[in-house]
Image 1 (cartoon, rainbow, N blue to C red):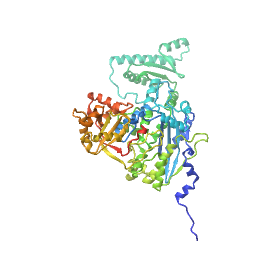
Image 2 (spheres, one colour):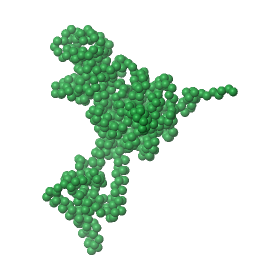
Image 3 (tube, rainbow, N blue to C red):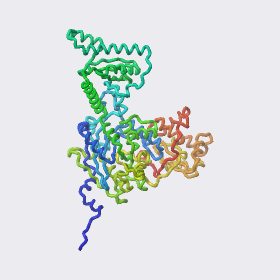
Image 4 (spheres, rainbow, N blue to C red):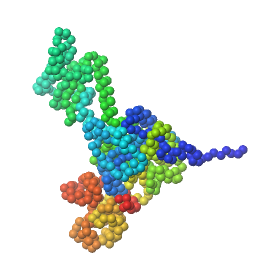
Length: 622
């Protein structure tokens, strides 16, 4: 009997039409969401998030840096990297936000990608979410080449408010809010004479107004009843009579609410917030029965729900992701989540530690594919995610089949948001290589649970991670990076422009005895370079010589021409103080000028090591 030939799984993939189509990202059916179809898509998105194992995210911003040195680089510590990302998130804007709930089933990834078009439209006429934002021309050019429709973005993009902005908007709109248990004080403070007089006066007004509204004496003329209501401050809340009670303090609010409990059978109290914060008044609404009171409470809940939905906009999706508590997968987590925190949660905290603590309240597990790449061993530098996937495919046998149910209409653009699907594909391949399964997330086995947890919430896993205009570009971990102590790094500036690192190194060699030992030079931008000393202590010696009057030889000539030097603490002071000048040299000059009134200890680096690559920075990119 002739044995039957069975092709290998790898060969089957070559003959699979579906897989061939998936190699071209423009054929992936990615549903495009704008303001027009946003509300009708929410329930579908909620179901996919609920049934997923992970949620991938990818952002398309209007920029990420204003000058070359603003980019997160290999000489940055986690703190300075965060400050750079914070600065970018506060200046630039998100125009596209792609999410992709997906499931891992053995070697298959089942994904449901959505691409949301956003625009910070001031729909409430309150200057929120943003009066203005900055654009980087290279980013807009890249988006235009992909066929991005800026008209659709501006006129049909989904607006939003962050949690902090929503709270502020509710106060400024002044809409009545139902009284909850948190609003009422649990204690009964001792009453002063003034409190007693105030309560009795308000009680008398409420009692006479209530009697006027419920008076059924047919002999009382309608005109008299109406005048009585006007004098007592009667109003209408919808179809129901109401009365507004002005207050001057939160203590008076509590006194009024406590007093209205005596009329709780027919009155429902509402809080009217003041535009500047606090409470402006308490409004009492008269109901005709218990059924009418329940109906009013339901109406208030419905009104609040619809108002919140209108105010939140795209943040409804962020809230769904947060409520699901599912692990979130990204490829540049520090950059992406500083944007997400700034736009959808609250203003960014001043440092990295507070940022991580704040973010974990909303998103407990964030996984960066760059960190998983590092764990599989040295990987050469890749131009983009597609190249990384191809490299892993050639090196490891870990076939991944992508299944994307056709949820997009034929007339919808398919190219926008494709990067989020590539992240899913790369993550699936890495999980296969590293033997990570979805069961590890909820497993009671400590070993399996730690398999996923040890990759989560590491926001500075890859020094030198790409932030180029094409959002898909990343750099893999390489074995040509070495740890360097921050104490061995010196920033140099004041040399002539357009000088290369090699020429500057040749100029320094022989200029002083500290350069007799091994050292290296890297360009930060056209105005500044860093010198890395191989022997501990030489950096301090060099800085002391530069700041003394004993400079001699060729180094003295360079100092006379304007050469200056500073340690890493000065660079950290630049970032902490927000001295984001176009040239790093100008920022360092300002930091040194203000150094006399600042404490050196305030800028002490918490992490004494940074990563430096052996590759020179390409000045053509600067």
